[in-house]
Image (cartoon, rainbow, N blue to C red; front, side, top):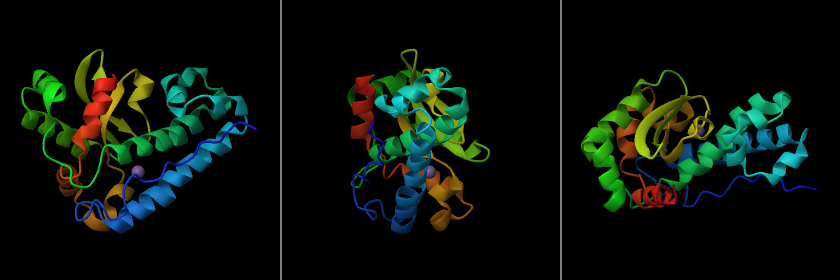
Length: 203
Ligand code: MN
């Protein structure tokens, strides 16, 4: 029997991102929402279990190769699984501040300044209509801010994400209610730039 996908454990405590992201939101978001995406991805792949040999990221990078009867499920639940695993990694306690070194240089080259990048990212996260994600991606060797709807991944567009912000209401509504902008601004306090730099250097 091929190995099923697992929801990775949160790499820090549920309350580690307080006061910016509250414990109850983290608990529900990881233990209920993320687990549900992973469970539904596994359920879809039971119809084509040979696909469990692939990394879920590779399924998203080539959705056309996924059998049509499960393609939408892989796009939605595979996206949900991969996006959330990524999201937990680029946040952390004792985080925030600014990126350094080559990443900072690349941000300045693409956006002018770190502040201009923040403005562009905040605008994408705030203006996105409905549920989705804001991203910083590497696209053809250059950094760009992108947004995707639902659980769509930039991987499916040939882009490599290095930073993400979940702007589904389940990510912030308990604490911030309808004030998505406050949540987006608070995110900068928990952005783990060390992890983002690692992802940037891997690309
Ligand atoms: Mn989410």
